[in-house]
Image (cartoon, rainbow, N blue to C red):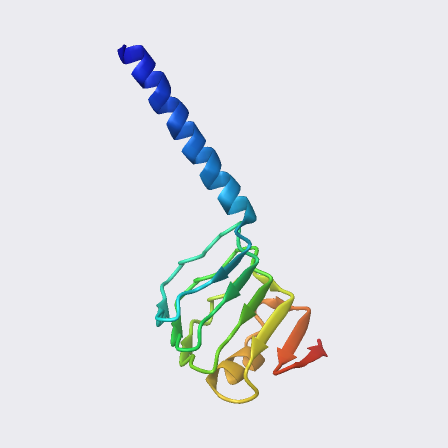
Length: 129
């Protein structure tokens, strides 16, 4: 009886682990919650399942190495941002970055090219690098 219970337990564990891997494989876009104010240091560092992150209006801070060394390719920087760590996007190759035409997020994005952009998006206009 114990052996059968152990087999069922292991089977359920493996099924859940497989489901988690399948979910992660398809979780390429993440819309962060509207009430999020701070993205903590290294929150998505070295993440290999997200290629797009949608930051809510209301987010204020992005911490040190928050997205560093991830496979992120697309991010929006909302007008509500008041602080972004210099190394928040270290070793990230962003294809699409959107940010407001003025304000902190704009100034930060324009002055930080420690990551590689293949394009910039200003409002609705895509400007090639």
